[in-house]
Length: 407
Image 1 (spheres, rainbow, N blue to C red):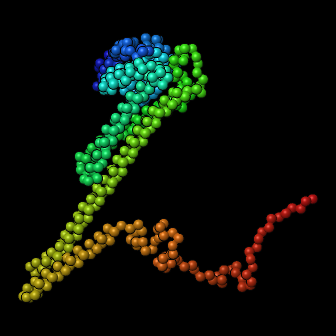
Image 2: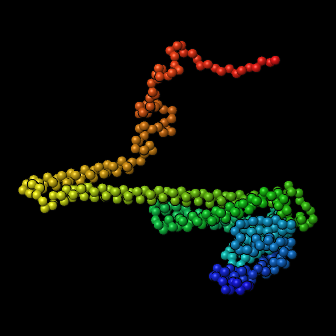
């Protein structure tokens, strides 16, 4: 390692450490190997990448799609004498008589991988007759697809139960903690939907390639017989069945995401309505304060130490008090009236629907208000038109095309 990474910024130091860790585990891969009878011959054995490439006829770029833990996009690659599978927690190399399962460093799906290994061992041991005449590679591929779809269905059921329960609680009461949980579940469900779509697209990509489907018959290749490109019914039916399962999972997750979006919109509408109610209450208090202030203004005028000729009157206090109350009430009533007019919602503005017609009234009789509001045409004055003559009204002259005579 160059000294450039030792005497540099923290970003370069982090990059240097990641490169050193990558180079330490870059030459070996940990694999579990199954033979033709379904027996485990090697458990978590370490193999050099160069040896794997030489032994199984692979290229380094093919192995990179398997040993890189950050690979997000799943795929099924068909090579000359092998099939490379990278789906969810499974990274495998399938041959005509061998299956290699790659153990990824730092993987969190150890339990799922253990269950899959037992299932794969059982299907490989059953033989071709017990599995409907499927060859060795098809049985291994079906075991992988069963494990992948089972993992997707299990995760979908957990998310579906949590989301449905939360949406039911939000219908009764809207709480801040419930909204936070809704946000978390929405992110998880979007991630799950994207993952299911990628797996469905990976299977669909293989189904669209006839040459790859024909090349997946590894047993016949090992026996020296080449299958025509059009004859791949068994593997096509196998992949189509699991493609439909993945598509169903995608549809269910899409419906859940749509339900969450609709609930979020409804919650936003309810929150907006509550916010508008609070603003309306604040406006009412402001109008009441304005009216009381107007009454106290009159009292303030008479409270000045000036002669106003009412000091000796017996009815001045009652009269001024009544005037102040009436003035305050008038201001409050006017303010509330304006507020009610502003509060009314109409599709046609302040005029209401009296002069408008919606799409539901198509074909009906025109309203009186519309007939009244229809603008009248200006009267026609013949004298104002210089081209007008008081003679007979002739029809307009038609211009006929000129016909050339034939010589």
